[in-house]
Length: 236
Image (cartoon, rainbow, N blue to C red; front, top):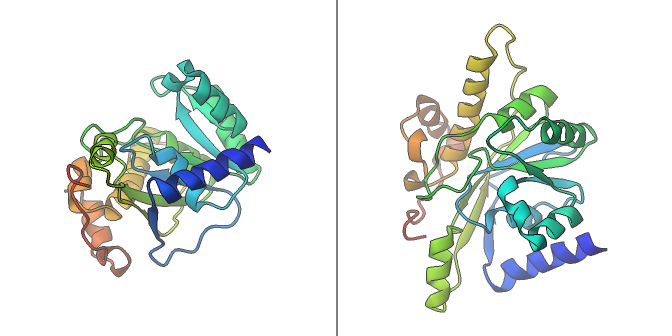
């Protein structure tokens, strides 16, 4: 009951305070388990999963630093999500994430591991790639614009609502890691995830992946190249 109420309040938040435009880009939502990945530019990003995913089995990996806040701890517990240590090998959180996926659930994670200070992509961490390669479930990439904290607050001060857009890309899967060179394979998988996200974002949001060869390859494909430009991170 509490979980349903929290999800209802999240929908109210985005409906009246920060309406969201969800662009599906021809996407067919995966059935069964999958991993949702997105860029991370503001505190409004995690609740977005409950806005456009009509599932009752969503698990969000939440940074361990938020455990210090009683309200956040309560919400995470009620939503059955998981705190994860971003800077150490959190085997407990990984095992729980794998278990949730193998039980048919949805896992939501920001591969960068923290909010980008500029709004543009920073280096991706290997956690999402490892989980996808280990379980074989599809990855649903989501490019988010308009949620950067300072820009949201600036709009509120001018009595203007934020303009938030979530672009959902085509789901894809990653092959198992090559045991002969796991480190290189994991890096290649991580780059694939980050470039898929970059392809869903305007140029000013692509950050360190802006010149990546894989991104240019993706942008040359009709499914990704038609995305219209959005405001830069500084003005969104």
